Image 1 (cartoon, rainbow, N blue to C red):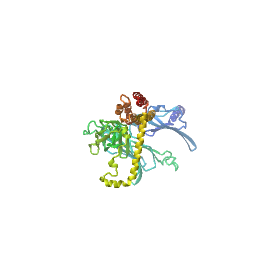
Image 2: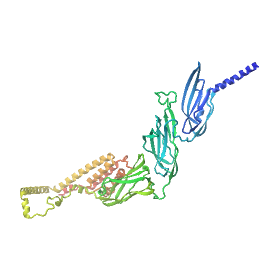
Image 3: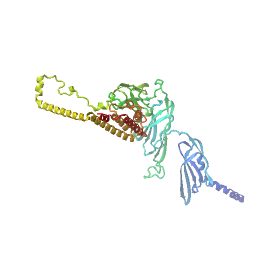
Image 4: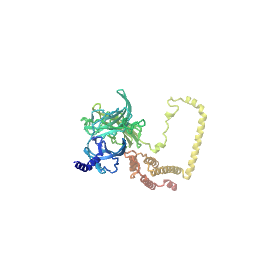
Length: 576
């Protein structure tokens, strides 16, 4: 009987030893339920102290990403007996939701047991940390809001312990625009305990009526953990501290559609306050033909994004050229929300003198506080345009007014005796003036007689005047050509009009119509229009403009003018 038992024991020994070897490999997870955006820790241990260099982790890649991996060893001596163990720590992130399996993993000739974990799309809210004075709260300023109107969402983080808090990620919203406002940090006493508070606000603009969901916001922090082994005076957090993850409650808001009383065809502007204002670069009743003036129109809407504000365009007005500039838009953010600002710069060039009126600008908007339609208005603007004086008019000084400038203006006329008595003291000066006037007249008479004898009186004067005008025209054309070479539209426009003033001093030119009248059939009017579009139009881009075409056209005009104008002064000299 003893021989049979011994033989049976010998036969079962390999099975017993194999079972013992398998028991040396173990696999555990720290949680069996996680959210899709969370990670879990998988720990694999073996008691034989052999490393995991031969471990095959490929089966994990089907449903998980390995985002962290570390290995450690531990040796113990108990009653003279030495034992060692090796641990492999893996941090896994799920790739999908559902019931996921951690399959058996081959570690050398051994295999771990399979494990299961449930992955949910969204974790349960957790607003307070365990065993730490750390919590979060969220707040919506209203539970219902009009479509495209502003909704304020606030996140607050409270902590009364030394903590390292990661920057929370912005919520991802469906069918809504998000604008982050200014952050604030302050202190607050709660139940006799002083907390630090981090506050972040968002302005949300729903783009679709119905239910809007505000998703969870996750806040990750590291707080001290005194129970961790290895914590000391120089390791306040105890090696790494304790990881804490908090999740806010899910918010829901009802988004209402546009009220039926709002004007059809108008841009929907739900706001707390909307204003509009204008500013002129020149006084509107002191404008001149051909001289540009800029009107700046600014619109500001509290609780609106700048992109929501409509463009402002002036209606076409007879006798007025309008160039719509590129709008400037910006969002001003404060703790109470967003104020959108849109600024339009519009250039006006009067084409004729007289009085004209710019029509009223009227922008409807919905007052959210009163629940009714209101209008932001710029009233009609009266313009007075004066004609531009010609070069001849500008060069000749206006006559002095005998009544305004006379020292006796406003006094009654004096009698003959009074006049003689008053002028008696000035008699020497009067005699000297008469003598000088007679001498000047005699000199002028002799000069005219001498020049008439040689036939050069009128001809010389004409030659001198013509030479001076030609020099002025040449200098103006030289400056114009330099401006064209620099391809600078602003300088070219000014230089072009200056050249016309010297080439045709008897005719004023400020607009394309004037250039077409002075130089019919030329391309100068079209070129001036192009310059005005670049300088004052919406495109506002001078890059790429070339002055070569203008120079070529001007040289053709000057050549044609020179051929069509014979030298009249030479003919006068020949036939005298």
